[in-house]
Image (cartoon, rainbow, N blue to C red; front, side, top):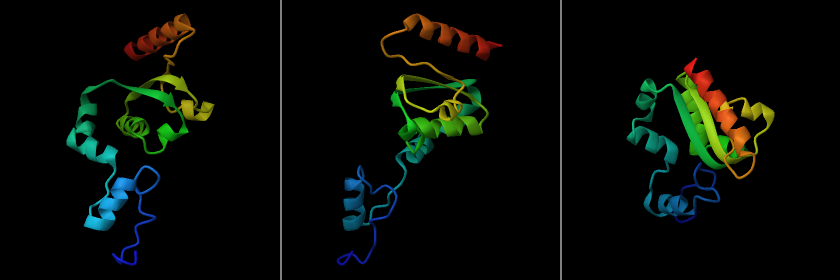
Length: 130
């Protein structure tokens, strides 16, 4: 701050995983932008949602952090704003009952209870088709 005259320590994107972004912003004046927002714009993600019926999201661990700025949560919010159904296929889900209600279907894909999971997938697919 003393060298650049700019206070960057509270800037979004400069937290624990933002060391490189912070350094580039401080040293070179680089603009820090949301990675998800940048990729969504570059891929025309919103226009892609126009032709789909359902969005399927996969994540290793679906948890509260997934809903707080990570691509999984941002895609879910964008899909919901377009009135789309959202299914999640995480290896494990650690969401509360209230957070789970943000999704039309959540099917954990980790080992164990494969038959029950298959029944969940089939039931969700039938709901989508009806």
